[in-house]
Amino acid sequence: MKKKKPNKLKILNDPIYGFIQIPNSLIFDIIEHPYFQRLRRITQMGFSNLVYPGANHTRFHHAIGCIHLMQKAVQVLRFKGVAISKDEENALYIAILLHDIGHGAFSHALEHSIVDGISHEEISLQFMKKLNDEFKGKLSLAIQIFEGKNERKFLCQLISSQLDIDRLDYLRRDSFYTGVYEGNISSERLITMMNVINDELVIEQKGIYSVEKFLIARRLMYWQVYLHKTGLVAENMLVNVLRRAKELTEKGEQLFASKALTYFLSHKISKSNFNENTLEMFSKLDDYDILLSIKEWTNHNDKVLSLLSKMIVDRKLLRVEIQKKTFLVKDLKKKILKASKRLNLTPTESKYFVFTDTIINQAYNLNKPILILNKKGKLKDIAEASDQLNLQALTNPVLKYFICYPK
Image (cartoon, rainbow, N blue to C red; front, side):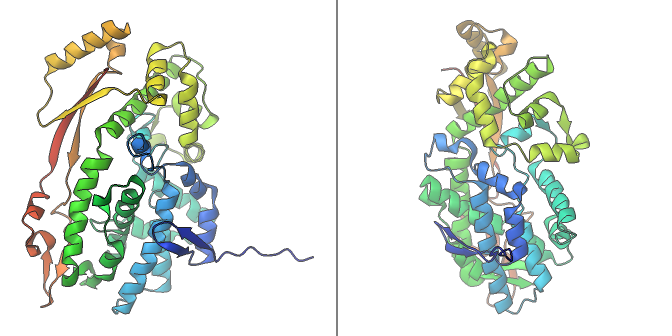
């Protein structure tokens, strides 16, 4: 009996866009790959669900949404006479599908704790190169576009710019799942207004108000969601838990952890030694490894590790204060001393519970302009083309300082 071939022309049902088509069998095979399936186990928004209970969507949801929007973009640009070959089209789909494949458990937390000096974009590139070997060079053009090295600039801008497909999905998706309607942008309208002039991705004059709303929505989503103080303190506490676990492991402690997590706790991983074996171990690490370990660590005899773990599991988080001025060193020392006495810890141990850092929000960067094509065929930066006075203000980075300490 002949073995039945699997149907690779699938349709997925997305709560935001409705039915999403998988464009071809290569894309289907990449989605089916264990590297990509791992994204089902990586939350899109880390600990934001401690603030917005609905924010449990994953990097998988986001990547699938991105490929849907990219199909719309290719369709719109071709309709307007922009030549995009079949190979370029496919490369765009692959690049946007895999743009976040290098994200670690709880997104950015791993980049600041058990992996040092290598970003998720660099890890994404390593995954893409490994997949390119497995798929016999079929990802080469996608990699070139992802790295921004393709001679057709607009192809790279669709993947990474201030108005790229990534942002058009995550703002709308994160707004939907958090219920924060201020971030609900019209991604389809923005794509419909896209065009290409002199190899640059531009937005036609009719779309100017949609771009204004997009930039304001981005600013509001950062302050209200991505930089929300509860999510901020939870992520920093997770970083400290993993740092403490790594410190104890380096001293010879045998901590409860999965094989993948044990590997990263017991090795100093940096850009220089992030090899193929490390990549393979990274592909086995997800949110479940971290959560299971933290639950187990609540019973550990190290007070710092157990207390931090309990605080995260029970959502009894540190207090956080945010202000425009830097916190005085004397105030920080006072809080460390107070925490030492209250928690019966050494001043060094108390630094896991009392710490300061900064957050920054810049809704629009003038160095990477969003260009508006006016009716006379001339290009203008959105900040100049818009009559919305506060758009100019959005170009200024807003820096704030925060301090965390026990309640």
